[in-house]
Image 1 (cartoon, rainbow, N blue to C red):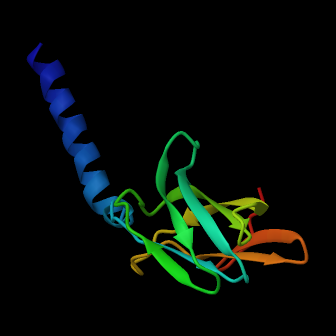
Image 2: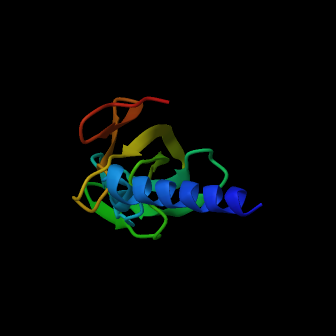
Length: 136
């Protein structure tokens, strides 16, 4: 029985060592990040940010035409995916266009998720991220 317990302790110590020293990005992966969005249209947009499985809204609110907004819910972590949704509305509150994109928060020391820019032109809308376009 004592050998079994000793083996478990050694296994635990080996796993703790690997987590602490062999996986350098793990410390970064628990950083809380900001999530910047930009509305690059002539219309205001209701922006919603959800977790990857779309079970929880992490942030939501208006982003005025031509403006940017940074979200700080405290739930954005590096190494995670998020969905951002832009709903562009006219002056009467009618939804003109609705679009979603999946954004990946890379392992980085920059302190923020790549920004998501929402566009609405000629009856079409889309979202671009800092480095890639992820239509969904």
